[in-house]
Length: 412
Ligand SMILES: *Cc1c(COP(=O)(O)O)cnc(C)c1O
Image 1: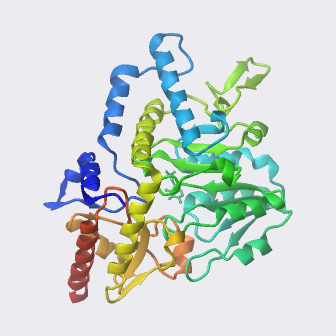
Image 2 (image 1 turned 180 degrees about the vertical axis):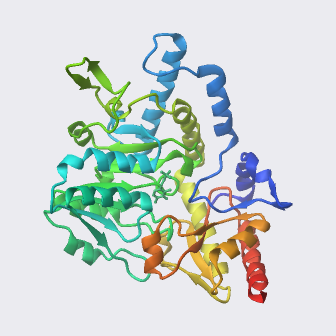
Image 3 (image 1 turned 90 degrees about the vertical axis):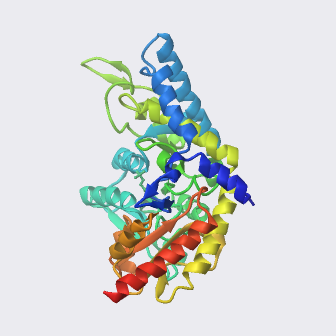
């Protein structure tokens, strides 16, 4: 277990954590939305623009070659980070959302009338809407894996839903609302038996779990840099080489072509076939520093520490009279450090606004998962999500803040 001193050292690497919000120290527990950035990431951005900046894959000149080398090194770094077989299976995108849209758009031709696509009741809107639109366009049917009251997927229902008609199963690795870690390996195996492709929405994955694409055997896996200490506007689509080779490109333009004439254009090889236009060069290179940061601490150390925080927070929060915690809260083996709840019948925005006054940053509202809100029959929730720089003291402060918010709001 990482010591208090070690965590303090890590905290010192995050300049924003020294900030005061309404004269209170910032307690940032909205990490499932985005994480804060350590100094080495912030400095990498400065370094990029002051020593490397040039367009990639185009120029012969020194800087362009350097920028290209750095970008391709980060591609390899990510390949190693998620244990992909080839670096060309790593496609840079804007983030998880764009990666899902890329797949939904590029497999368009595989979907025919009457085909089926399976998602689950706990998906983020990013993993609902693209599939919904494809189904509408193609006359395909969107099937939803229901969940139990504790938030777990109803796997028996999944077994009933999956069939030869299923073209793709697109499921979140970890729920951004409940923190539940889904049994994706099982789902992938089962889906492949029926010849369906599988996409895993891993937006919450790499900051919480060690990932191994070859072991998972998933066809696609998507994630964003900004939820793992990296910059916004950059993410990855991992896809199996054979499949990426077989599907058409998503966007068309520069960088993704081999040869262009007015008669015919041929496309580049992987990964460039899916990377039209100038990529987010800075974002990619800076992301590399964020991965260095994570790897230096060790993902399993991060995971263990966050789990301790989670267990402590659940213990404290569940002692608050009138609190409603959503999803399974006893089996920590299947839960990452995300807790969503409501307090008495108070509106989540009111609670969130008061917490903000105390300097506590939580997420409130539908959490980009309205169908899941409907399942629990609420309009919104309050979400707390931890990161490596959060402390047990902050959990206490949050606990006190919630008690105060409750007292203030129940009075009026
Ligand atoms: C954050 C998140 C997304 C969207 O990620 P972007 O970085 O905004 O594209 C998708 N799915 C889940 C589960 C998320 O947590």
